[in-house]
Structures are given as structure tokens and as C-alpha cells.
Length: 400
Image 1 (tube, rainbow, N blue to C red):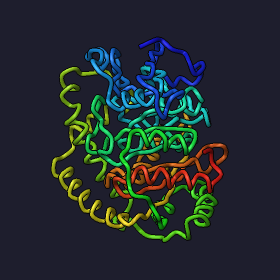
Image 2 (cartoon, rainbow, N blue to C red):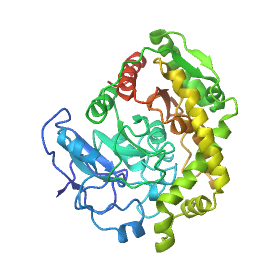
Image 3 (cartoon, helix red, strand yellow):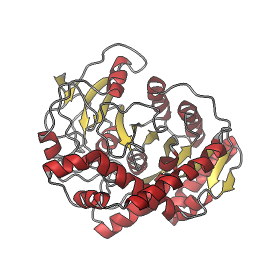
């Protein structure tokens, strides 16, 4: 372990406060010569994982060993440049942290960076590292990737070990990563993911997500969809959630709440930690989640999986806006942020509830604010989806 400032001055506040503590590669490999950062919920040997909260840091000892995902990247030749900021206990979608500071969004500094993986997204978007690890429960890789103009992946649930990572809602939690190019997104996947059968399409345009998106967002992504149609064939339009996207949000939040309290409620009850605005309220709501509501949500999740997985089993790929909304302005009110959160989770819950891999591409912008386009495949088809995304990026003229 060493102090490090390689990669340039952190002018966007992406890294956790204090000297950057990096680690040199363990061996040479496919990622040699590249720097990466890790969200501060992944253990790094000898360091305290603060999980974005000073009381968590106070009550936890330095990690004895690094998380396997960190070790795998070091063995592949990458160098760890340091740990990045996260929303407290990963329970938030804007990227705000009152203790460590909220990272700037390098693509549009007047807006939030998004997601609890905010620091990792900011570090990659600012060019401080080549790629960065995040985690995604309700969208915390996909949304900051969309907001910051990056490539990002939420792998299939369970595809990559989360040993040595702090939990939020284990049934949904998955690691993920950010890059500035489609090729590196796939190279990292080649280190971390098992092989999978290729994807042949067709593209499936999810009608209600496009209709749910803000008019400007949908319009900004329409040219990208047309280019993908020219490359992969005209998309088939379908309705995925006849019960309504808000129903997906409500069931997702019920399960997430029960999981979050089961994972973290014991520590919260014992330590009475100080939380920033809204985080404590989210955990209070999680503690009060009725068992009957969560049980009904878990039953719905099984039905939703049974609906989606056969639909995608032959190699089809869903396509829709990653986020229905632009990144909220830093000046937006709590009510405005809450409205964005509900609208966004109504979309991110599709892959979350079904455990599907999702890649987001920086395919458009509205007034300089980036918007992402998502591709979603069957579970376990992660590497094939990354290859598909690389071809899609080429068709869109995006960075390789």
C-alpha cells in the first residue's frame, strides 16, 4: 500500500478525504498499465472501509484482506489509485454526502453526479483513473454513468462475488464499473465475468419506458435508436409492465427496505449513527416496512422474472433510456429530487427485480447534460452483452 496522487489532482472531489492510498499490481495481465479506483464499500487490505459514514468508520477495524474483486483486478495488472466517495451506506441516488462532500459532475457541474457510486463516476469522467468500481442496487452504477456521460455496467445478480463489500440489499446488490470507452468496459468484464453465448438480437423497444421518459430525454436518444436499428434491425416494440412502472418501483422499494434493515438494522440500532439529510429517514422507513408488503413484493418479483427471462433467453436485447430524467440540478428541492428518484427507480427496477445485466451507453445529451441508453440481456449473458454494446457503440460513433 502506498500514498498516491497519480492520475492528477482531484479537482472534482471524487476520492475520499485524506491521502490517497493505492496498491500496486500483483501481477501483469490484460489490465497492465491501467489505474482504477474502488468505491469506499469495497475492502482494501489495511484500510478502514468507511462506507461514507464517520460512525461506520469509527466502529470498524481496517480490512484484513481486500475484496476478491479488487484482488482480481490487481492480479490482472491494474493499479489501485485509491478509494472513492459513496453516499452513506449506499442508500441514495443523487450522489450527495454531507460528511465527505458531494463530488462534482465533470460533465455538467451544476448537476448532481448521481448514484451512491458517485465518486467512482466522477473519477472516471474527470480522467483521474481509467476505470472505477462501483456497486449497483437500485441504479448506482447505471444512473451516475448516464448523468456523467460514461459507459457503465450492472452485471447479472450473483455473477461476481461481493465478498469483502458492505451490503445494502443483498438480493439486488451487484458490483459494476465505469469507463470512458466501450472496449475497456469489455476488457474489465473479461477479467471478472464468465464466458457466455453470443447475442443475436432482436432489439426490443420497451414502450412504457420511452413514454415514461421526459420528452427531451426521449428525443435526445431517438437518433441513437435509429442508428441501432440500421445496425441490428428494426426494434420490436413491446409492453413489459402492463401493471405500470410505478408498480415496479413500489415492489422494488418494499424488498430493498426489508433487505436493508435486515443487513444494517442491527448496527444502526446498536450504534445510533449520525446520518445526513434523508438517509436516516430512509432507514426509518425500512424498519417500518410491513412484512405483508415485502412478502407480496417478493412474490411479484418471481412472477416478473418468469415473464422476462424466457423473453430474453434466445438472445433478444431490451433497449430503453437508462434514466427517464436529466441529472437533478444542485439547486433542486427535496421534492424535486424525490420525484426524480421515484421516476428513475421505476425504470432501474426492471433489471434489478429480474437480476438482469444492463449496460448503459453515453448516447445523447440535452443542453449539455448527458443521457444514457441502456441495453439489457438475459441473466448470465454479461460478456455477450458487453460485446454487443461494443458493436452498438461503434454504430453510434462512441469512444472505443
